[in-house]
Length: 161
Image (cartoon, rainbow, N blue to C red):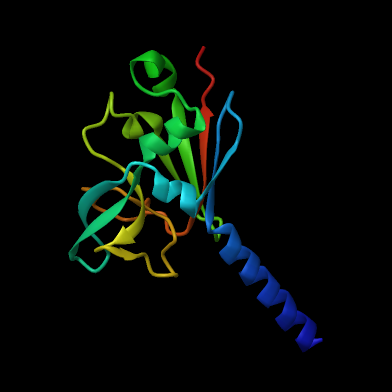
């Protein structure tokens, strides 16, 4: 019985690790996009400096959240401003941890800061317990929305009557 339990745990954690190697982006009116690490690295890279949990400033690099959403077909900017203010983004981690952002926090039309999905810190790949992808929000006092091991980004449009 213990052997079956151990095998099940190994399969579960292996699947979790494989799942964490991609980010699935979904939203209303778009085809779901599964972003692989290779596709991610082929996109325009952004760099931000931010203080991490260790209270030290690190150099994070990756892709802006806005660019990832745009690549998936989510319309941002002046064209979508009315829809943007009634939309949110749910970020999900490999362990099912979730954090929510107003879409206007991500859209450069509304926001002054750049939120990135990082795959590197200080020019090195993120450690396994954090990566391969982590949300970095410069200037945020608490890191509760710095989601580690990101696996999904889902845009939700609230009913605006």
